[in-house]
Amino acid sequence: MIRYALACEAGHAFESWFRASDDFETQSKRGLISCPQCGSVRVTKQIMAPAVRSIGKEAAQSVALADPRDAEMRQFMRAYRQFVENNAEHVGDKFAEEARKIHYGETEERAIYGAATPTEVRELREEGVEVAPVPILPDERN
Image (cartoon, rainbow, N blue to C red):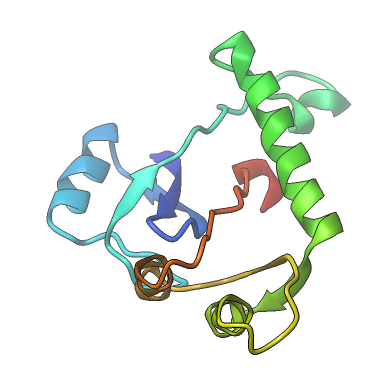
């Protein structure tokens, strides 16, 4: 069995187990893998550091990074997410609604973050509303 960190086109992150590495590709092409949050079948594998087993109390927290730049990238993504959380208002599932209100001047302009479906993100972009995904690293969900 192999576990992959996955994300849909809206940036929702989740994990799934597969019998073999080829199973992800086969199931993905057939539309059998979907995001548990929004149902999107446009799912891709994400960077995931494999767990490294060792003897001792430290074993549960050990990971091996495939490339020395992985640690730097993860640090950058964590810092970016922390910056957003510290400087924007969390609006949860009402992200699309609040983004529109701000865009059309119906409410005060402010930085917000939250959840949106792929359809909502596409519609917001078509309306000229600037949106960007906020990364969630696999180890942040554990």
